[in-house]
Image (cartoon, rainbow, N blue to C red; front, top):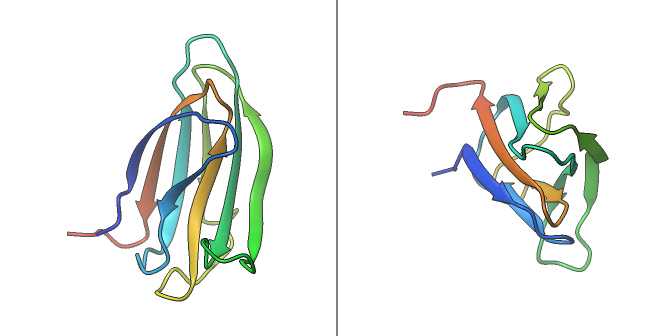
Length: 113
């Protein structure tokens, strides 16, 4: 089952898996909250197929966006591309700076029980 709530502690150059290919989640919105009290967070959000493959295709939703301290970025369905999150499709990933601390909340279009 997909994890929709993530506490993220930064590590430069490391991609964090938010949704794996095969999670079958249709995203309604994503909230990315910078929980650091004084530092901006630098965030990139992207989709990628076959993440362990050298020939993976990567498409950025946004790249190196600065989110001010104690601020949230809300990305809703009108700004998100429709992508195939089924097995063999795309996963959703996040890259953050080394000292960034974030909460990421994914709201699916359909409630998962």
